[in-house]
Length: 157
Image: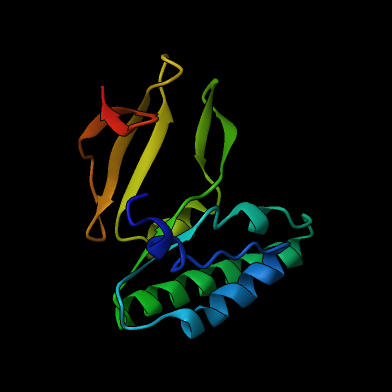
């Protein structure tokens, strides 16, 4: 990254152990924000959410909490000069004789996201496809772009 040591000193890293830790971090994120433009990256917003047990009462509570976290991040983005980048896990399920791959908590993520880019594998192992699915809060059937990431960064293919 350009900026070296000066930029590195501005990076705050949190590593939650479980979904409860993630809740606390998101709730207290405002304490580390300033009026300086910032980027918050949550990798993966659904990773620890998905790690809980499958008891239906707890699933409902986790869904509600994930929704609340996304609402809070959205509120912070509106009040501060803040961009929020979320990654999410995917799962596959059978659909019409094929396996459909989709994000975990699809409806919740789609509701709170203003921009959605879907990254997909291609037959070439080092090439990915990026599809625009939502822009400015509106679902689109947008363009796509093939790319690869190498030691020099992102490269069009």
